[in-house]
Every structure is written in C-alpha cells, then in structure tokens.
Length: 335
Ligand SMILES: Nc1nc2c(ncn2[C@@H]2O[C@H](COP(=O)(O)OP(=O)(O)OP(=O)(O)O)[C@@H](O)[C@H]2O)c(=O)[nH]1
Ligand SMILES: [Mg+2]
Ligand SMILES: [Zn+2]
Image (cartoon, rainbow, N blue to C red; front, top):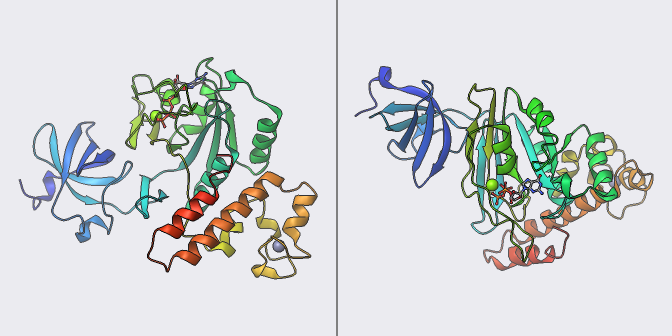
C-alpha cells in the first residue's frame, strides 16, 4: 500500500470519525474503515486536525473493508461549537447546506434561547436555518407558538412535528431534499427518532428520556451522516448539546447575527458602538418596545453579549476559573 499511484485513489464522504478511524462512503457506494495517511498536520489535510462527518476525502483502498485517507478537500462550510471543557473549537459537521435545530415542546422543555444560539451559529457560518419543533403531540402552548412565529417572521423555516403521530415529517423531508443538513439540539428532543422516520433503515439509536430529570440521556455520542438510499437526503446526526457557548464573535458584531436587529444597526445615536443596552436614542431598543423585535430575542442578545464580553475580558487570564464563573452565571437561565 502506498499513496503514489493516483489511479488507486477513490473519492468519498466521511460518514463518521472517531479514534483516528473514519468511516468513508466511497463513490462506488462501498463503506470503508479508514485510517489517516501520515501526520494529520500534513499539507494534504488542508490544516484540518481531523476529518469530520461530511468531509470530502480521497481514499486509497487497501482491502474490501479498509482504506487510508490520503487527503481532505477544502470545506465549503463547517459548523463548529466551542467546547467549554476542552476550551477548543469542535467541528460538528462539514460541507453542509442547512442547519436544522431540533427542539421539543416538552420532555425536554422548549428552550428558545438554545434555538437563538444555534441561529447565531448558522448566521455566523452563512448557512440557512430551519427550526423543527418536535413532540407537538405533547402540546403546543401560546408562548411556544409566539416564539415560533417570531422565527418564521425572520425568514427561518419552521416545522412543527410529531414522530409519534407522524406529523410534519413529509414537510420536513421536502425541506431537506437535495441537501446535506446537520441536526443539532439538546439531548432527547428527537433528532435520531426523526432521522429514523425520514430515512427507512437508518437505525439510529434512540432512548427514553430520563424519568427523574426529564432530560435526554445523550444517546447519540458521535456525529454521523445518514443518507437515503437514493442519495437525495444526507443528514448529519449529532450528539445532544446541553449548553451552547458562543465564542469568537466580537461583542459589537453580535447584532449582525440577529437578522431582526440588522435593519437597525448603525442607526442608533452612538452608531456602531451602541451596545443596545442602556443608550438613549437606540433604534434597537425602540424596535423592542414597539414589538418589532421580539422582547425575548432581545433578552437572548443581551445574555449572549454579556457572555461574550465576560469571556473576552477573562481570556488573558490563563486560569480556567473565570471562564467557569461566566458559565455558572448563566446556569439559572431557562435552558
Ligand atoms: N411523545 C413523543 N416522543 C418522541 C417524539 N420524538 C421522539 N420521541 C421520544 O423522545 C426520546 C428521545 O428521542 P431520541 O431520538 O433518542 O432523541 P435525540 O435528540 O436523538 O437524543 P440524543 O441522541 O441524546 O441527543 C425517545 O424516547 C423517543 O421515542 C415525538 O414526536 N413525540
Ligand atoms: Mg440521538
Ligand atoms: Zn442601539
């Protein structure tokens, strides 16, 4: 086995990656378990530390089941989160066309601030955003409807679904056709259940939520791409996220990732330096008062901004404590 003969390489898509081994779906449809060729810092790896689900790669097959990833092609897009424990960027999925946040009405409860954060991530990556509110069989109340309507007004797709009662699944399927989508959400909202419903034979593991805490049990532990048999739908299922930290955005730029705030940015008396928090003659605050911006979206903005400011101020301290205290400050928040 060596990588010199170009004829022997095939193209493929990474289905999943763990422990230096990737499952790659090759262009001939074969799934190979692949190791990485040489060091992952090689220039052929485009500076990517490791492949992730959705990566386009070239592979040297070495047997019917195994191969070696020779290179990772440049990513068209990637969705990453900030890992507070490891204090590093963690890429969840590559080459995606659509970010889908799966929320639930109950069990676990509807957490709009979580959705707001995924929305900021999607805007930051320049990707379209779709919200699925699953488990509507458990009841949809007025406050959930109001928040969903506010998302819809922003141009985000909203699908109300129930896996149990087979509602909204066909509508969702239509939105996913011809795309690679990433499903992201808190544990137990039904990401894997929806995938099993959309793609017969997907066989993603699902589990009851915990009786005691009414939270998911973090059943999915690895990002993995699941594809329909005719190839018209690719979905990357991801492990449930308890808390979504936003980093790497300048506090003054945060408003740009809130499409409801964008029309007012720069109009305030203090121009681009307005924090939209306490300043007089602030057009954003005025829009909130007039109900043009949903007050709860504004509250999300304020919380994210405070977090960005706090973590930026503590960045220079090598101690991990300040970062933790910033985290705890938000632990009483509703998600
Ligand atoms: N009532 C109801 N229960 C649902 C629905 N969809 C999923 N569930 C249940 O919710 C539980 C969690 O579903 P999963 O699909 O494992 O959730 P997940 O989002 O993949 O969770 P993680 O992998 O832990 O992130 C399971 O018991 C499902 O049967 C729904 O529409 N209605
Ligand atoms: Mg799952
Ligand atoms: Zn302002």
